[in-house]
Length: 288
Image (cartoon, rainbow, N blue to C red; front, side):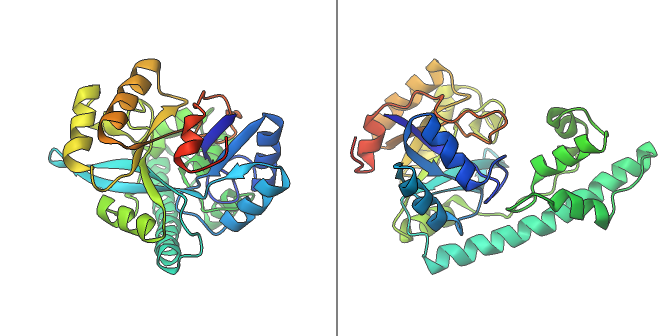
């Protein structure tokens, strides 16, 4: 059975397709077990469960949380995936609403920083009209990929990567300072389990920001995360065989869940392209 436990949608965050189209594509690709893991967003989990049923897919509630993690004298941004929680849990919902409100404030601050750069370059400044246009077609909260796409439309940059390289890294504003301890408490108290996402992703938020050495990464997990996490995402679209093998061995040693997914944002559609073993479903007590 094909398994993909890391998928984003435009309904909840920065995916390219709304929930119904995501599930349609998943069904066409033969995915049997799926989880929508939008950033800080769970309001649409009920819709996801119902839509999965319509397409005959097994579903696990999901969410992706960004954590500010102190390590070796600096703060590192890491992503964690929450699975199997009760999406009606009041405490979890209220906290995520607070985080999403911060995202809106952050987007405006990023736009102000962009204007500082544009003024220096002699470019026209972004206005409230530009902000409104950025929001068009964004079902979830405006995020940096959405801003990058808008800069492409305006002809400021030719690609998302150029937008990040030239502007969005420099103009970034800190995300909501969620600690690992708080993230673990939120997810676990809602009946879920917390999983470290893409731990060695060379292009994303990961422990690569601290060290590229795999042994060094798992030593950090061993000394600073065990007891607060329930698993690790071993299979990912940007994890090579050596990374996957290393983390499988680590998870077996410490009896952690092993999960996997494409991290698909539908640009392009990667759903179902990561070879996640069937036993992963069994960890969540799913029928295989």
